[in-house]
Length: 241
Image (cartoon, rainbow, N blue to C red):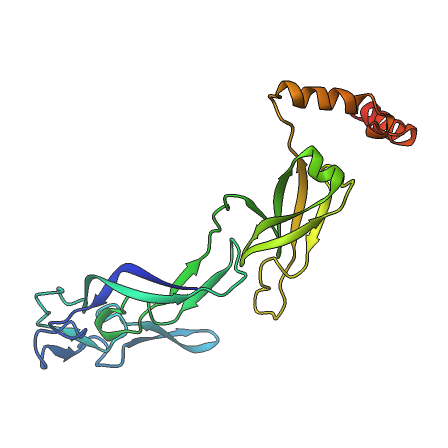
């Protein structure tokens, strides 16, 4: 996706065009370093002569000093301003990923090189998708009759709605996998899967007729967990308690 960002930053002064000078002859050769930008200090020791080279404190290493600064930027060559940059956000980025826009940062002082802009991504939680790497998880609410009898339902995906087959006897919390319906791999050709977790919806209010039907179903052994299943659930209960 493409995003446009407005940045507040230091921009080149339009009056002096970034030079910081009010006129062409506003700069003089630095009298302290004689235009070299460096100061050499010679010292003598028992081991011989040493030369220490440091940046000139008068001109800051530029080799020249400004005698007539630009009044608009006070000799800095920059002013506060704004710019709009276009960012190409690659598919598959996640929180912590970043991209660098070279030369789009603050303008350098007195015609110096501009800095960079670092775009750090922070992922916002989706309304109903949960991200797990390149896979996404979606909780699908189904009625008791749908999981018992089976059904074909429509589920939302990142690219639109898709049909999903629910097999008869599907258990609650079962994870169904929709291949290649997840998030595109960053700098890759493939994409993850969409995981669909079955959530059995339990009605809180029943009509009289519906209650009678459920009471009849409750009498049937086929709607109860088998001895094997009950044993498993008991072990789970004991482990939890």
